[in-house]
Structures are given as C-alpha cells and as structure tokens.
Length: 414
Image (cartoon, rainbow, N blue to C red; front, side, top):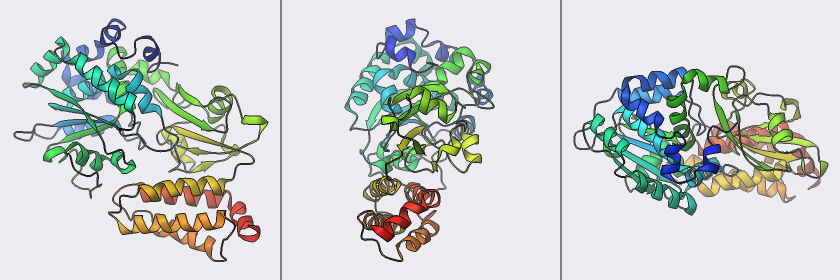
C-alpha cells in the first residue's frame, strides 16, 4: 500500500516529475470547485494524523467560517516539528516527497480562504528543511499557484519557517508563536488558533501527513480513499516501527491493519527470537499494549476502545529481556528535559517522576516510591497548557498498571 510513499521513490523533490505522475490534479480539481473541498474531505473520513485524530473537515470548517483579519488574512500552518522519540514519518515526507505535502497545504488554503501558508519544519532535520525550501521555490510562479491567488482574490504567500527545535514547539499554539518569531510557549485555549492564531488571524494547523493525503483524496475521490482502509477505518497510515524488531522502518499500511501484521509481517518479528513483551503505541506518550492485543486493529477508534491511542503511528516494540521500567524512565526523562517550564506542575512534576524512576531503576528505591508515582499519575494530568505532562503521566500509569511486578521487584531486590 503506497499512496504516499510510492511517488517519493519515483519523483522525489522534482516538481515536473511530480506533475507528470499526476500531481497537481487534486489542486486543479479543487480550483474548479472550491466549495466541494471540505465536503469531499468529510466524505473521505480523513482525520488528523499528527496524534489527536480530530476530524479534518471540522477543523477546516471552523477556519473557513471565520472572516479574514484586515491586513493579515488567514493562515495555514503545516506542522512538521516532529520531535518525539520513535516518530520519523514527517521527515520522510518532507525530505523525499515534499510536493504532495505542499499541494495538500495549498488545497487547505483554498478551502479556508487563507492567503498565507507556513511550512513549519524542525531545524534539526536539515534534509527536510533543504528539500522543502527547494520545493517551495519550484512552485513559485507556477500556473497553479497563479490560479490559486486569483481564486483567493489576492496573492498567496508561502514560506518555510524553521521551528525552535524544541519538543513543545509541535503543540499548535506553540507552533503559532514560533511562526510569529516568539518562543514556543503553549498558551491557554480558548481562543483556539482557528479563531485567533498567527498575528490574531484565523489559522488552520494540520500535520504534514494529514496534508499529504489531501491531493490524493481530491484526485481519486472519497470513496476510493475510504476503500483503502480496513473495517470501519478510512485511508492509509504511516507507521514508524522501531525497537526490538528485525526490520525497523517506515511502513505505509491500510488504516486498521493489525498490530501483529505490522510487527511480525512488516517488521519481520522479534530480534534474536525473543518473545514479544509490549509495544508503546503511538509513541512514548501513550499506553503500553501486551501480546494479548496483537490482533488489535491499528486505527483511532479500535485503540481508543482498548484504552490506548494511535497517536502519531509510532510503534516502539519491546522484547522479553528489555526492562519496561528502564524504557519508561528514559521516556519520562525526555519529557522532563523538554518541559518549557511555563507550568510549575509540569516542570516540577515531570522532574520529580524522573528522579523517582531513576532511583528505582538504579536499585536505590525507597518504600514509598511506588505509591508516590501512583499519586502523581492522578495529580499531574490536566495541569499544563499542553499535553506534555499528560503524556508523561499516561506512560507512567500504563507501565505501572501493566508491569507492576517489575517495579515491585526493583524495589525489593534492586
């Protein structure tokens, strides 16, 4: 299944090759009937693929309903900040096939009436920055871009914005602040970016992968897109597979593919014939699933029904012999180091959790440590302006619930 990735291999950052391969047809159809864009996205069942899985058409409709801000218009931000451990899909799309991402963002701009498009890229991903800048330059002056400006009633401006390189910079209000040249502090909502984003203008934010699907939906139709998924799921999904598997890498599969097929089919099974122990689903900010869930369908609703989340589609596999306690300590340390410090419960809480986990993992745990960790999983969620502290609390709570014995053994025996 290669809706997004086949063209990357064949055409790369070459705009002419992209257009010859059918690129541009989605934008051209959108220009012929702009009013049909959002209903088409709704009929396709496209959801945000940066983690939350929010219905794309609802976000687009909210921005489309807002008037343009005088002197500023509206904005579209294509969020490519990707910085979570185990997630590497967006950098592939931006570095290998940026034109489908750009075309999707241009269709989004037309749908909501935006005259500014920001391709927001993690500066540490040099290949992504370079390829995206070259791709934007290739679009400059193209007839499709001229037609888009004419449809919008004023020139469309598109540019590449390098983020701060910080994990919190991927949160939507932090991304808005970064595009405005400010430090990426997440801010309280409301107002949401759809109401007041860049310089106070209505702003549409979607993930790189979300925009990459849009040209294909417009080109082939919503029924085709829905038919790519399995069960009740629509379309395809990029899965970043890593950890204790023989063939880690990026895999595009039908939405609704089972975890077993991803790990043992695409991933080739476990390293060194080790048993499957667990997987961090959707990256390290989500819950753990054990082998009892190997046949779960990897889609938003199926994982939610099992108390988990699809997230970004990162799947970090853990084999027998690898310590869940150690992996959890590593990931919580990441969150603690990446707290922006704006919200005291987040900054202090994540560091406290990290210190306790480090102490237990080092064999110096204290009698009340496990109870303290469990209390923190209750106190911390919802205490920050973004999801960082919630992610740390989620993975901690899941690891204790699922592998409590590891914590108890470490506290007893070191």
